[in-house]
Image 1 (cartoon, rainbow, N blue to C red):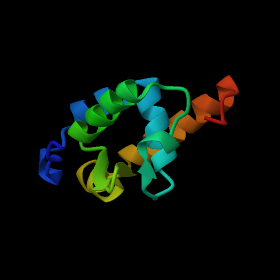
Image 2 (cartoon, one colour):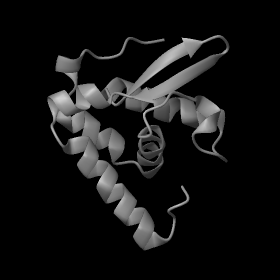
Image 3 (tube, rainbow, N blue to C red):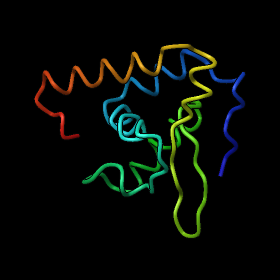
Image 4 (cartoon, rainbow, N blue to C red):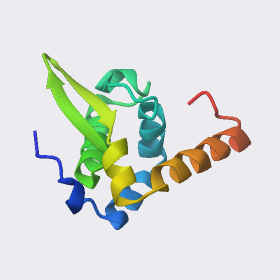
Length: 109
């Protein structure tokens, strides 16, 4: 597994680009509960190879941690690092995503 960027290496443009994809934003929303989740437990109906790509983009942007656990890889949100680098950004993204989901009627995502 590729190394995660250090906190100081997390760049705003990379975070925004990664979070700009609807599926990746859905993943971030699911991880916002603060727990660790297995790859397949976050979103349904997406091929594993596609999810692997999206998790890699999120990891490389510094948005998520990935940790091997037996045969699984656990994902979690790097909330502390993101808050330290860009105060309020993550909460703003999550609030906007929640509002968008409410307006489009897809809150169950």
